[in-house]
Length: 280
Ligand code: SAM
Image (cartoon, rainbow, N blue to C red; front, side, top):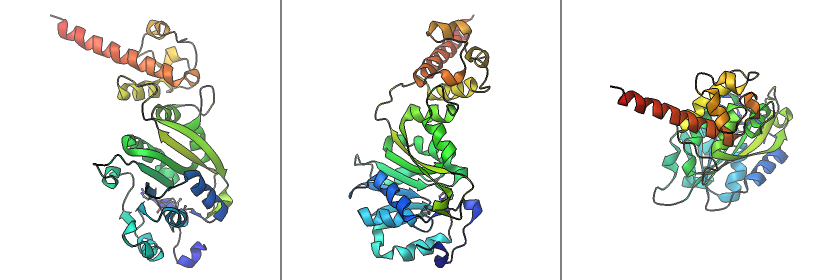
């Protein structure tokens, strides 16, 4: 497809880099492996590069697009699908994905998107807050963001983003996509990632907000020790009592240990409030 023929000028503020490499588009759709009857939603269909292949595969799709100038182009391009192609004009960050699911059914959403780089992290967190209704998500993101999402302890990419994503999901870094696959070409490499929310959390925290706060605090200074970064939250003896070495850097701490640390912080807070209440 030649995007320029569609008369649309790519807009930087909407992060518009349109896919134009047919092999890459097919590889993305093969990775998704959509099946008829599944409920798919595409975020930011743009000029319909991935949309077209998805519709050909399963004949039904919801899309969420912010740029209102693209709506008539998409309507014309896919008019033959009638009410099986549903366009939701608006910001995916504010979109309520529950509205796409029949509350009576146990069907879950499959989410797909070549995302604008500026919204990718907040959008992933917005979607993770809906993770109960999501089967999986396939995203094209900046390569560095995918590396951070999939990073394991010990890697320089390991940090808050990866830990919080892996708390909720299995993360698979699928393949790289070079700038030449897009028009206009972005300045950075991209990659495709698959996020599959866990049906049952492998390491459930007593309080997820405490986990998020603890992980953020633990990484406030990457090169400092756990003891140093956490000194205002957890006394060193508490870290040691969990069998975790307080002198290591946060990038060496596994998700399961972060959950133990966060639970210990939750208990400490709870005990402090109970003691306050008991004070005469
Ligand atoms: N899917 C198309 C492709 O692969 O060629 C377009 C991808 S382009 C990188 C990102 C798309 O997301 C654009 O169509 C843009 O208008 C849309 N977009 C940007 N911000 C958005 C938001 N907050 N909500 C929904 N769509 C958005």
